[in-house]
Image (cartoon, rainbow, N blue to C red; front, side):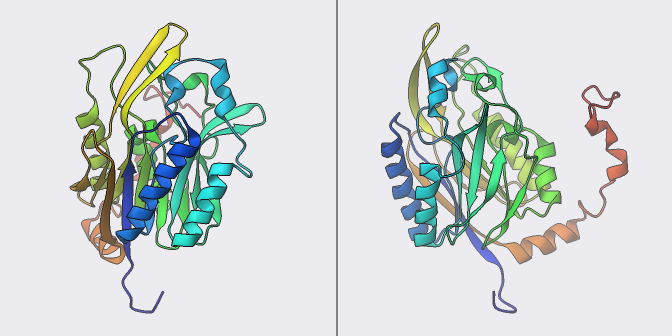
Length: 300
């Protein structure tokens, strides 16, 4: 980067309905990535597990066949080619098989097509419609940051986004923008429960306490055959980009495909963050209680 040139980055969140056909979903993702690139995006976020339906509505042994090893994963390889062609950064979500373990994982692809490494989802939910513990081991990578061509980024996955500790851990390691690919919608056991506003406000808080944040969620109705009959989730989209005070700077609705973009001046954000004093006035020696589950007994 030229001396004196400001570090400005354009980020994008994509939103679309998935089919249960990998090639169709890859074609949709590529089309929207190209559209984001056409709007000037440098870092483009695709939603969680976009290769197919969100299969965790059911506990089915045959769905383990959807997992593939990280090395030479065909979707990652395809996205590496696309990233190199367009000169963009892309976190790529996938269902990982690692010997006898399985993870909800994401590979970070830099603008030259190189693979910067892997993050494995740390917090694994287990509830009606979101039975991820049946499929995924808890991630063992810890929270990580990745130095890309355009910014140092932190990437976590869906349920991770509800935990302020995860956001702060990534920012303490230097993350300048946080990215959360997501699959969330209606609750099969309770038609009256709508988490979308709660979901959005929690992440707005992360942005306001830390750095800008990008969240990408799917849309559409997905019906899965379960061991107890059909289960249905309507995914509520509402993908968004939040700025440094938690303000929404770009947002999608709950029904339409979307390509959201926003530009941030990273040098300006760093100066504002430093002058605000939140990181200056931290007291890590007082936070040992965070290493416990019950507020008194160490969990590590």
